[in-house]
Amino acid sequence: MSSISKDKEAGVGLGCGILAYLMWGGFPVYFKSLGSVPSLQVVAHRVVWSLLFLFLLILVWGRSADVWTALKSRRTLLILVTTAFLIAANWLIFVIAIDHAQILQASLGYFITPFFSVFLGFLFLKERLRRMQLFGLLLATCGVLLITVQFGHIPWAALTLALTFSCYGLLRKIVAVDALVGLTVETLLVAPVAVAYLVFVSLNGAGSFPLSGIKINSLLMFSGIVTAVPLLLFATAARRLKLATVGFLQYLAPTLQFLLAVLVYNELFTLSNLCSFMLIWCGIFFYSVDAWLAMKIYRSALS
Image (cartoon, rainbow, N blue to C red; front, top):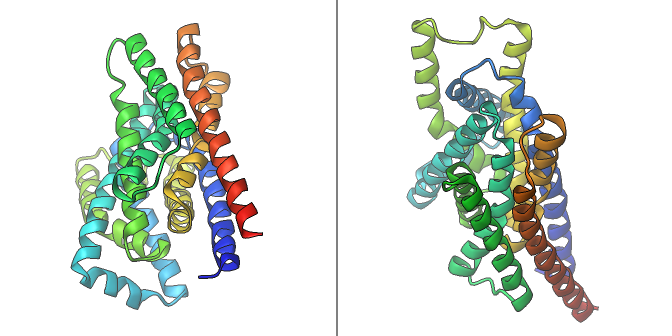
């Protein structure tokens, strides 16, 4: 692939990544509106309505054969089963965190996700780390350790969000399917469990849909589009960008979530919390400066 083609692909990936993370950053507002619906039902509806939306796209764009090909490949199917589990777990933990007024911890999880991504890229994809990057990682690690001491316990929600999504990004980068086909297969694999659960709660009189009114029903139905679109954008970005670059873009979403938690939802944010986040933000700064300098040197070498 020529350098011009690579630049074009990277540009598409960058645009998709930015848009995906901006949408994810606004997720607390959307799912706060579904606070009357149990978290597991919200996730099940996200799966079901996402699948319907994705099937529509598959039919319109004539990609049914590609979906069938992915399902017949043992290696591809194994990876997508894993990614389906990872993203479903990530959704559930995130929705639970929002329901329990823990948007701040959710934002912490997504702040540290890039460092998990960088480590996985180094470990499995042999992406090299420079000194300033390592210094940034060290500062962020200190921030996480400090906030762990402040909490008095390990922030499991934050760490699980970071681990599940960074692993999801790694596997989606190496699987040999595009964004639409991969996400459709993932959702198809999880859908039977989601449908069975929704049928079960409905038969037991505990189902929220369609008995919760127009507003809640509409939000549940549109959760499919809200869920699928940023994931499609993310998967497109992940296949076109270095994992370290994807990790850098990840800071957009938790920044928006952090601002929502503190300024809109008035979650408790102490001076000690500020010190912890400052360490993480300083780590982000050094890592970002290094990434910018490396990109500048690379472009100079091409010209």
